[in-house]
Length: 209
Image (cartoon, rainbow, N blue to C red; front, side):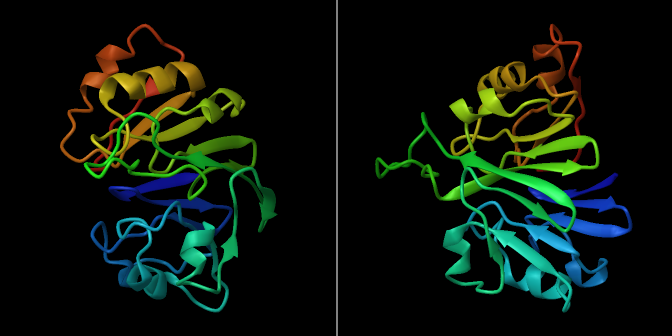
């Protein structure tokens, strides 16, 4: 599997001749110039994750879009996955896990991300299991992910994880590789030193502001 880091939460996986995109957002790349998608996974309804322009540019008659129920209100051609679902999608075993806030809330008093609305995904690319966390804090569901070869965790305040919480999440998940993503101006380089006592996890920093 080859991973292309497009920026922010936007990723592309090239696997067995197919292109799988995660949260394509026009702010991260010009998708009109990229290969068409076999499958697209969307994690939530926010504009930097659910971008109809990018979807249109990536899609052809063969494209499958996997999305939370809230996104299906605007994009009715997709396959809805809810928290807890497990499906085999074009040969990929996909588990949908929650993505939400427990600690940080908006000034209005509500969480930035409500439980049961957004999705995270554990996707099996052959024998490699990749966790795409979506917009989330450290949550109890992370205790039950099983072996994870690569974990993409958001590291940005106030709506996802601060550095210390991300470290706790990595210690809980114990992925072979950890990629911080969607991190904005957070100094994610500090994570290497903060996780220095967990040599089983390779912390890899890419340009995913």
